[in-house]
Length: 577
Ligand code: PEP
Ligand code: MG
Image (cartoon, rainbow, N blue to C red):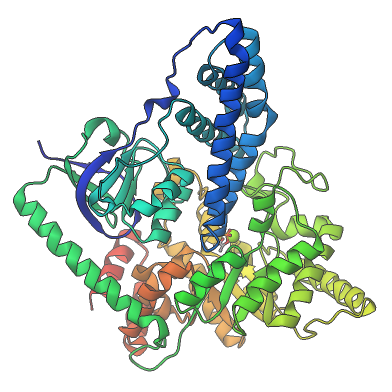
């Protein structure tokens, strides 16, 4: 029987192949009572399973030098969970005290830990219970002799993995088999599995709810990762239609690769800067391979999140220097820590992280940096030291008040003079920019333009704060509309004010990497776009097919529209031409 399921489109492209179901029932383990003489053996079996999973993670990490920083951080997190005595020691006590099998002991302990996590208010921490489950699942697979592997002899290219859930480490384990695609029941568009699929360039659809239950091994599947559609047992006509779509998509993608060294210039010869968003020095390779002309946003807080604490000056300096040198003279914009709200550092006792009623409106980002002058000096010194090795620019996140710039400039002066005192070289003329991502900053942008060398629009937060829609809450995601007229009014105001003031303006939020919005932004006057490296070729192609002199009058008319639906309709038309 043929049927269709709809989920979240997380990685573009079309895959056609056979279903390969990944078992999920590994946490339903039997409870066995063992004899007193078996206890030591059972503890040893448990220890051996832990050691084997640990070494699997370590091997994965070493093979991941060029993978996205947050994926590596994720493996680190799983290693940390594995090493925690709550999981590595307590199950041994359970085995001894209750004389039970190792699988049952670790699952019992996992249930206790997960129940504790689920009582926590903080969403980030609560979600870590998922990581605990994934780690335990891996240990149980090891204990039961069912490690994650595809059946022997199967050709990955024609297989589509169907799973209830996949951890990034599962995906890494499948990497060598070159599967055609992944589909899962759970997971969000920004989950690590989704990021990994995008990085591997294979189509993926997540959040399909019960695909794992409805699909059987070896059934024919079509995955459309662009629209989030999964077709099970398609008839011949549908199959032929998708085979055609697939080859068209592949031709387009290989054409895009040829654009790597092409200039991003419009049909009427306007040069556009395409920059990369990175989260660590490890992302520089992808940035260069995509043809990025520089880094428009280095989200430094990922250095802290990867380590669970704020790195010291030398460690930060090394990370920044590596990225700066890696970019081989191209400009690199380093943003100071954007911690707080959903990016929380729990291990740092220098900062206060009591739960707050409105963390998105609380002591976060530059507010947090200014409230902790010692840590701020550490970061500013590290960035300044790295500025000697290339073209570094400093970016201040979440500005709402002009005096935050004055305070940051004073702190920067202090860091500079301490470096002079220590006879350490840095770029005296380092440029300072600010993120425009709070509506107040967008409306009163003149205040900020007067004090800065450049500005960068963070549309992710700007949309969140303008529409009062939490960007990470799927319950209100239907209200998160980048094309709401209020958002467009703010964008056009910032871009045109910066142009009048002769101050460079770029955009580094997700809107900048959406090729569907490229023409709108060009028509609004945007000339610098910063995005994940993988998005650059498609945006570049759109730029090369656009004529700004034709776009401008159309976009001017579009910006007068008040109905969101009409705006969406006009943008579709703009993209057809
Ligand atoms: C933004 O808010 O658009 C942005 C680029 O910053 P982040 O996504 O890191 O909050
Ligand atoms: Mg932001």
